[in-house]
Image (cartoon, rainbow, N blue to C red; front, side, top):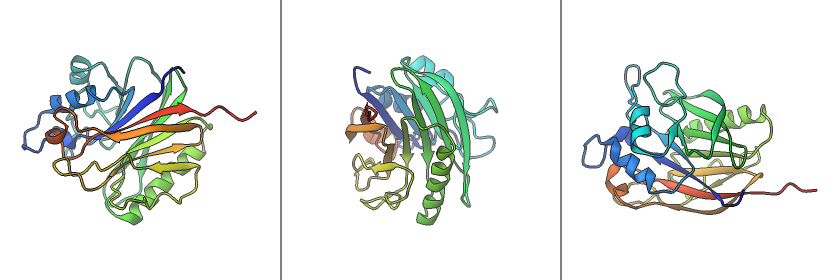
Length: 235
């Protein structure tokens, strides 16, 4: 792999901006400016009924260079519990795993296996508002990953973590949780709700929060990104 992988995450708030207008095309424009190979999207679907996509596959294909991972089989939603993954043409999907997470409200994680410059697993998630639920949900993700083959894996999304040091940081599972910066509220960022967790097969080279273009108005979250290199296995 010659250049680092850029992986990003963005809570698009169902395409509703701070001006209260539902304009998901703005969110797509923000994502296009990230220069990412893969993007995890939260709140990609509306909340009620059969959860129709706020950001449709057709919109993604026509308005960006990304392809959506079709995670939901109902023909209406883009993601799984609102979690979606968009990939560049450097990657192809080799497997999809849908995980329901413990909570009093519907929460889930979308696990996507990819092949490309580097075999990779992406876990897109949106954790709960309560600390206790976040820990249970993160543990459920780690337990599911422990059942799978060991490979470079990134868990990312809206972790709803207000504290500078995540309550998930000391949990076992071989993952390190990183905060790229303050991503919420987009109008005046004061907290790093959006996080990235990476296992020992990958090295986080750089990370940040994007305020480019319409990012300050397109959602209540700013997108985060991380550049990754692969750690050579020990002889």
